[in-house]
Length: 152
Image 1 (tube, rainbow, N blue to C red):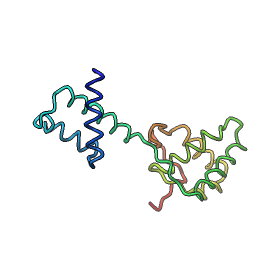
Image 2: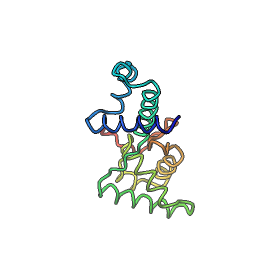
Image 3: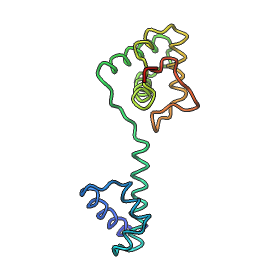
Image 4: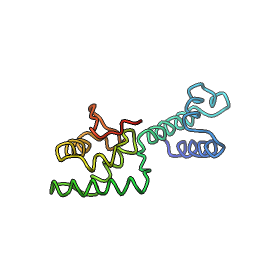
């Protein structure tokens, strides 16, 4: 794609987003042909569509890391317990995996998980490591931790 066309498309998109438009709404209007009707050229409109698709895709794969300080403290305790059970546990990787799962669709009973017996603890913690989608923070392959919060 021509750099001038992409820059022009970005300029239009910045103006639209700053005036309150979402990338989804812009993409919808492009599909309806509204920008072509308003005099935008075809190449710029196609570039705008491509950029919108990229931004929408980025948002879909964005991981939420927002947890409370209490939840973080519990996750830290869980990770330290796991490290005592296995020398191969990487603190940073495991804390990120558990946080991502907890904040992105599979809220965990963190107190229950921390106090679980070794068999159930390892099932959940190492199952999370094995089944997490690191692009989304969601669990795949139908894995459900035994200490998934059942109150939701």
